Length: 124
Image (cartoon, rainbow, N blue to C red; front, side, top):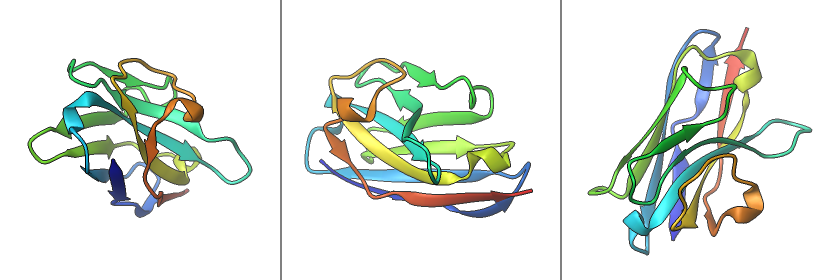
């Protein structure tokens, strides 16, 4: 699976961004699609996931209620709508795929494929 994330940028605190991740190469619906992020000097952390064909979605506690993950299987794409952004959301955001995955709090090593990241910067 090839993954390409986009949509990052600079936004003021309280603002919104929508990240997109386009997938190609394998049967998209066989994969959980997962968003991670990595801030400078910190480990890559789980943000949100969409189960492989279950419709279930999962969120890290620190984004729950502000971020929404969605996927369009017809277009092989997954999105992350980020609202009420905070400076602590500043990070490089990565999309990743896990075969037949359906869960939360993934470790980066659980993923089968990665896309290049997109920078999100939230100014105070």
